[in-house]
Image (cartoon, rainbow, N blue to C red; front, side):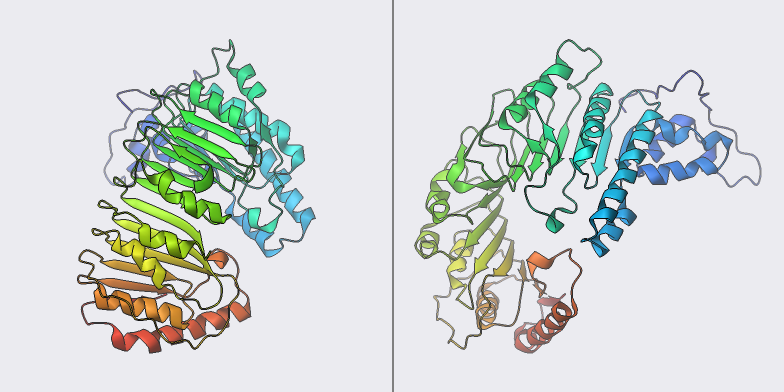
Length: 461
C-alpha cells in the first residue's frame, strides 16, 4: 500500500477501529473500513458482495474493493454438462454480461488493482467488452485479465467474437487524461483477436508492463517485442495460428512461453531463464530449434519442448549442446504407436544439473507392440531427483524409459506416474476412459513396483 489510505466517496463514512467491549468476539468488525476493504479485495465479486448482509455497516463496503474478479464457476459447470445446448450457452452469457455491467455501474473505487473477466461471450457482447476496457483503464488498472477461452475446447478455434483494434487504443489514449495506461503491470487477453500492431502500441503505452499473455488469436502475422526500456519479464503467445515471425529483444525478460521455433528471433535477452518452444507443426521447427536458442541456451533453468516424432528429430537430439544451468526439463511428445522414447535421453544427458524431468506423452495412433528393449550406454545423472511421466499406458516404450531412469539416477527421490492422457486433462471422462485409467494403474503397479528402490517414492495417480 506504500502508506496510502483508501479514498472512499463523500457519502461513505470511514469507521475507525472501535474499542473492544467485554465479551465481544467479533474482532473483524472492529477493524477500520479501509482494512476491511483490503480484505474483501482478496475475494471474488460474488463472495465480497455476500458480506453486504452482515450488517448496515457492511452494505457498501464491497463496492469499494480494489479488485474485481468475476468468477462464474457454477454457470460454466452447467454449460460444460450441456455443451451442445447453444441456447443455454447464450442465456448464461447474457446473464454474465448483465452482471458485470451492473457491478461496474455501481463501483465507488477510484483505482483498480485487478479486473478479471472469465467467461465465453457471443458476438452481441462487443459493446460491453469495449466498455469494460474503458472502465478498467479509467481506473488505472494494474492487472487486466480478459479470458474468453474457458470453453474454447467445445467450439471451433476461429470463434472469437471481439477484436482489440489499434484504432480503439489510440482513440482512448489520445488526449484523455482520465485514461491511465501507466499503471498497467499485467495484461492477459485470451480468445479475442488482437493484431501485432495493437500489441506494439500497448507495449509503448504501458511503461510498467511486466507480464503479457495472448492466447487464441488469428490476426497476428508479424510481431516485434523490442526496446531497451521494456520492463517486460513474462511474455506468452499461445495458439496464435497465422503467426509468421516474432522478434524479441527485451533486457528484463525472464520467461518466454509458447512460440514456434521456426518464426522466432531472439536478440537481447540476458535475463531469460525459462523458455517454452513449439516444434510440433512442421519439421523445419526442429532444424531451427538450436539456432533459435543459441543466444540463451547456456543460461536457461527451465525448458519446455513440444516435439513430434519426425525422422529429423533423431538426428537433432544427439547434437543438443550442454545446458549447464538447466534444472527442470519438460517434454510434450507426440508419438505414433509404441516407438522407443530412448532418443529423449539425449536431452537429459545434455543437462548435467537437471533436478526434475517431466514427460507428457500424447499418442497419435496407439498400437500394440512386443519389440525388445534397446540397449543404451549407462551414464549416471547426479542431480535428478523427481521424474513425472504423464500418459503412461504400460507399453514397452514407457517401461523401457523408466527402467533407464532408475538405473542411472543416483539421487532419485520420486517417480510420479500419471496414466491420464494429457489431452483429456480437465475434461469429463467417459466410462471407457475411466476403465483405461484403471488398467494403466494396474500395469504401472505390476511393472514398476518391484523395481523401485526403497529410497525412491513411487506415486501412481
